[in-house]
Image 1 (cartoon, rainbow, N blue to C red):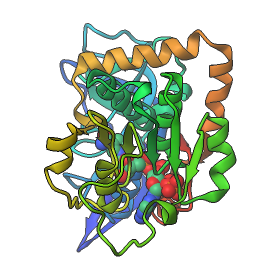
Image 2 (cartoon, helix red, strand yellow):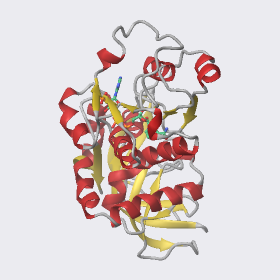
Image 3 (cartoon, protein in one colour):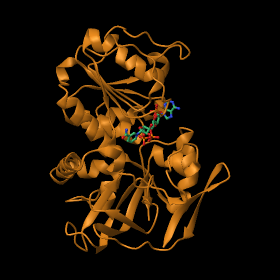
Length: 333
Ligand SMILES: NC(=O)c1ccc[n+]([C@@H]2O[C@H](COP(=O)([O-])OP(=O)(O)OC[C@H]3O[C@@H](n4cnc5c(N)ncnc54)[C@H](OP(=O)(O)O)[C@@H]3O)[C@@H](O)[C@H]2O)c1
């Protein structure tokens, strides 16, 4: 089968399209003919070798996949089912979605329900993670009357879906973005205020104080670093900050003060390790929203910035890491 294969060559990762043998199907596994995958920030780090994403070599990358079951050794799935996988080690600990076929344990496979494989991958890990952040924040008591939610890295895949999710749930959403040209798009999604990085952190060299004036009810953070520290410092009493990403950096310099004096919660969001029942519930919610609302179905296409082929993945990944992309990038297999 054709696959985008990543191998370690000395200290570098070399990724190229090639023919590789089809692995054997074992008990409890399904074989999926992949229709679509997608390009996430994590995939970009992996296929370029910029980040240590791959836990084995050689490997086929791609943390997302959706398509049709063509062979099954699982009682949970039938040939012809349209299914998806996001995370669960796909394209990280074992071969992923950048191939004609994926073999996956039935513990990680989810039925697409009423979604097509393409619709499922428009959401992909990005859309699923945004919904996971909303679910965790609601569970932790976040309410619209606590104040606006600031979404950082708002032009990206997770960012745009986080805006969608919180607007749908009745929150006022503000968006932090370095891409002024994405202003109109974000406003169309329902953002009430655009915040530019230079307004949010006027001096990027100065670390934010642990407590600052309250500005937000809560936040969804894709960046980490000083941005995350500043979000925690500016969050309302009992508000939550969902920590999703580290596009700016993995470090976090703060103190226990916002937690102790304001009851602020820092919620970790790990879509890769989301328990199966919660995973299933969130995908059912996503599928239901799309199926029950015609406008939602057509609005979904506006999240797709580009559709690319397997042999374009590495170049587009480099663009993503240099911050030249926005929205969702679908990979058609
Ligand atoms: N925890 C999880 O389960 C999980 C799941 C999915 C993704 N993630 C992480 O979440 C983040 C977003 O992922 P994604 O797939 O949405 O990526 P993406 O589409 O590339 O979006 C990332 C956004 O972050 C901003 N950004 C990128 N590089 C930056 C930098 N150096 N400094 C400051 N801002 C930067 C950009 O937004 P603006 O130009 O609008 O500022 C960019 O559009 C990544 O760190 C990813 O690894 C985590």
